[in-house]
Image 1 (cartoon, helix red, strand yellow):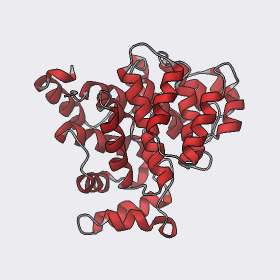
Image 2: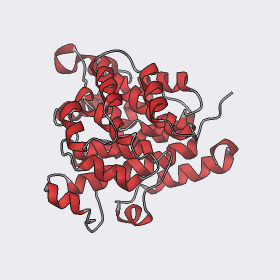
Image 3: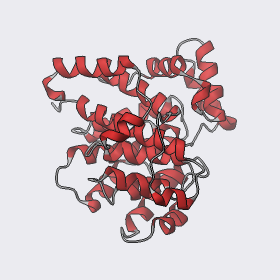
Amino acid sequence: MPVPDLQGAYLSLLGLSVGDSLGNVLTFESRARLESRDLPSGPWSYTDDTEMALSVYEQLSDTGEINQDRLSTAFAIRYNPQRGYGTGARRLMQEIGSARPGAWRSLARNLFYGQGSYGNGAAMRIAPLGAFFCQDYELCREQARLSAEVTHYHPEGVAGAVAVAMAAAYTRNEKAWSRDHFFDTILEYTPHGETRSGIIKAREIPESIDCHEAAEVLGNGDLVTSQDTVPFCLWSASITPDDFQETFWRTIVVGGDQDTNCAITCGIVAARTQPPAEWLERREPLPDEFNSVHHNRSESNPGTS
């Protein structure tokens, strides 16, 4: 039986949080400023991307799987309106926090006139889960779906989460990198729809093309949807999977939903290569309890080291 990879999930969480926090403080900076690659002083505050990823990681660390009722409660408990949640997510978190257990099912379904959310919020937090289940792609897809549905019940919202989870799983699991195999694996498990169609386009765009041109075709998250976010993020992550810094700068410079784009791409590549120590030091520290959860679990489970 495949052994869950808690170490990989933790490394992905670190990368996601760095991408999110640095992306957050550089949001709205000029293209010239971003192309200079000058690092701002710390601390870099993280956003809801990291806040929600912490809850995903915590549940995997504690129980080894996603329980939707418990995850929805964890999201509501950790909800902090100062972290930049979107309008739909704010309302959902507030309603879940004051409702009976399991109420998320009707609440998530009823968002946006009953169609559910197809925003990029399920994709932004999912990379650690992909790394965790990297040795079992079928299980990874199913667990990603369960994680997504708690807040994003629309098929496109689920598809974006599945695609990013599969990207992180492949990146963590496959030692011999193949860009074609990376996309083939993602497409094999991602449900059909607009997000998947965008990923097909991403696979066809050469690595050598300018990132701004790629974003023109694929989107850059301006619409804050899965369809407009995930394809470009996967294209960017596929180019330099062994270079965290290059992946970050390529991703943020195209604008759009910059902190989320960087959380996604950096969460993927961090399953394989880590951010610089200086970047980790400037990022707002993660809560102490998450470091202790990681260390305790790693010491007791030989499959996570």
